[in-house]
Amino acid sequence: MTEHKQRILTQKEYQQMAKANEPKRPVLANCVRAFLVGGIICLIGQGITDFYIFCFGFTEKSAGNPTAATLIFLSVLLTSLGVYDHIAQWAGAGTAVPVTGFANSMASAALEHRTEGYVLGVGSNMFKLAGSVIVFGVFSAFVIALIRTLIAMIGGV
Image (cartoon, rainbow, N blue to C red; front, side):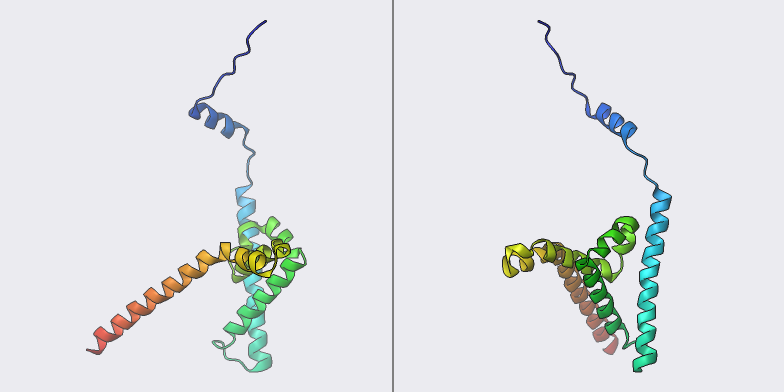
């Protein structure tokens, strides 16, 4: 009876083996797809802004909030229909950068956990990912407001 000995790889050997067997990623193609889809989302946003300006008489500044709300609504709608996930899988980071990616992440978490109830499922799980973004945004806004107030106080003295 022969004893079978397993050879234990060192960390360096394992990394070399993993690198040799890792599939090559099409980095350039991924960058082009992300750039194109992110640009198309921004182009759609600009079209929505122009629509609000020309059809409803908004100014360029006042059309920003309804444009963001419309993009968020479209993102949540496409997420609930399962379309946004297919676009994101093909485009990669191009869908994550604009406001639509944030809306998609929250809507996806809400849809995934809806069977657990509205409070413990939807409410608690959709803010797991978004919570840190919201906290960082609120904290950053506070720091900027504090700096701006200090500058105004110093300049007004």
